[in-house]
Length: 437
Image (cartoon, rainbow, N blue to C red):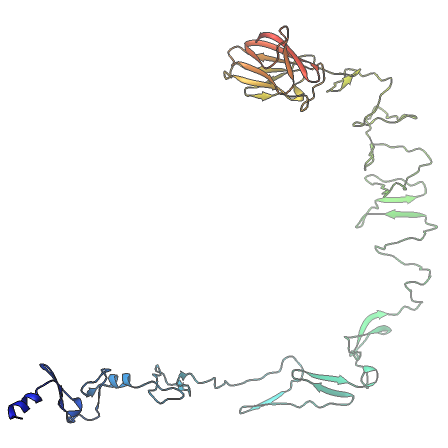
């Protein structure tokens, strides 16, 4: 091979050892570059993530290349965040140290002897509990129980009492221990004690606000009663006694089996009144006596009763009947309407008035007997004033018949017209008048 051909083969594409030829691009093998001199404390490396020439790396680049340390792998220690108290744990996290405690103090609660004795360094020292005679201790995780073991649950020894006491007074227990006594100051009487259920005679005793249930009071010369407080008694019962001024004598009769019987006359100087469902009130006029009949029954205000042989002088009668006929009016009362109107039972015997101020045509309706049952013979008049709108007199389901013609149905009443409807059967009315068509 000639020298020219040998040189041409060397320039062809391919790996020539330290140089890689690719057309016009020649790439040097990084490993063929000799080490360069670096400054002190310098780390050389490649942080590009690909094959590249080495370079002097900054601390930040070196830190980025190294992994963080964990419980199983060596690596970089995480930043502490500053401060002087935090420490690095085995899991490579910075943590504040646990509470190192505080200075302890101790005191006894209450006025008795406490168990705490002293504090020596970190040692809290307590007095020991020693079981005395007839006393044992038992304890669990939270409680120490002191048990008395003497006969009957009590201790031996003297009962403790007060420093001084009232002579002949009853001693009582102070608390529930059974060992402390107190002075009740209640002195025993010289005579016999009164029992709650004994049969005994009380002499010279005053009962304050007693409740007496049953029994009998005999040989009383006077019984005085007051409602409350002091002063004059409300009632005094004595031989030939009377109620004093402003006083009341009241008996409460709680059921029908109770009664008050007077064997003599009852004379009253003022009004007499009772209360309840059958109250009676007699009012004295000062000039006229009230005499109750000796026979028959008293008439009541609202009762349904028949009066016989009675004369009514100028009475005022509202409604009702005389000899089975309804009591009517001595005039024709007016019911003025300025809108559509349906008659009601109270309109019987009245006239329905349509005033001239209402120029609008209106309808006045007679209701069916099934809804308003006017008695047969009921008459109702319709009046349409001068200048008022036309009135239509209608009926619902019953029959309204025009007098003379006999035709049925609604009727028209012109202004200045007057018409009267008369009920002739339970479901039929007949109507006639002036201005009626």
